[in-house]
Image (cartoon, rainbow, N blue to C red):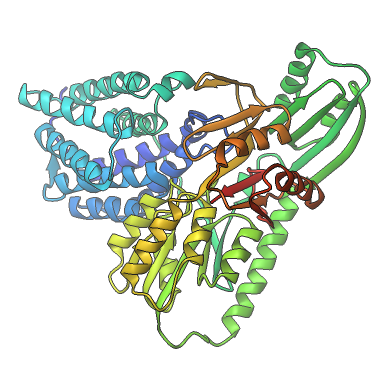
Length: 556
């Protein structure tokens, strides 16, 4: 029996199933990250974007098509996170324009809606790149129009052929983007879109899909800062366990891999780095004793550190709640409207403090591991008592969400300075001159951030090959503005190999921000070596407190 049309109730059901399927696959999609860094977040960003819309759709009773369309478009636009999430929200926005005026949807209407979705998304991206989610979406639209023109009316056949073609286009993305081919992965955003389509089709075919409303991310306000708090349920392994094994004898690669495999069986977030004398181990697990017992078979242990992440979560929530209560009890001192204010995105207590000291009105906690949503940015702008608000995204994956907030804000002028790193954001604020016009300040800031080179040091979470570099899980990596600059098993060698490529005859200032996994004494040693190595530069050391990245270093 053929089905030629679907009503608003079925559209809503299909959308919720698409959201559910994407959420189920988000971690796998995160792992499709081209660079093997521990911050792949495409799956998370897309999931949080679609879930923001799904909650609104799920709340509708006896929905009509305009209501479903409005819920999908509005919820996804405000909940959009990261570049992939913003593009997904724009696809939904265009798609809903194509269906909102109909009581029932047919093949020709869907084909037109797919085309509107692609047109809207492409317009939202300044420099669209093929081999991405946009390419997969374009393939879907092209196939939909082709089927409609051929006279296809059966929706079951239509959806099957559209999804088959989407998968074909997705598998071609490595041929369009060499970096995908080198990493041996398809585009993660495109994979996310395919998972949404698969979920929608499951609901259409009658498979039982129960949408469970997710808990919202809790947010607290403290002295002009917002801090997103991870749900305790998301903390799968409760103890962050670190130690150094003093080897009794050098280990073979096979024995090192055996240790990694064992740790993977009891936890995650694993780093194992070995040389002839020691092995450095980091693992999140529910039973640190098992990790320690296994390690003792390799040698004696030192520098042991075990943190209860769930307890830290509780304490953080309590501190934030107490501070928020104190803030609510205090009168609002900011009664006079300023001509200009600032919102900056940052990660780490030290970075946030630097922005506050530079006069930034509102600091959004976020970055590689948690991109703020468009709504987060709109809420931050609301807290700034100024006619014009500069937004500093400080991450290339947050710029689109900031631009989307700019287009949605109606009562204030928003100027987005497209800072791609925190050091660029700091430079932008430093170069703001109150006596100059908004336009002149914008021009100055854009000029100055272009002079800032940034390098970030982290570790690899999987084996891969990029730009001719063989990278192994646990290796240290120095990542520059355009790609990977250095790889090695010694962090100090990796740092200075990276810095050598960043610093030239025009460099005057080097700023070193060390993360929450680095001791002050160690950072001071790196700073001292930088002063000796680059005598013509001023070198500054700051505690950034950032996660994931051991060091963030800028040269300007």
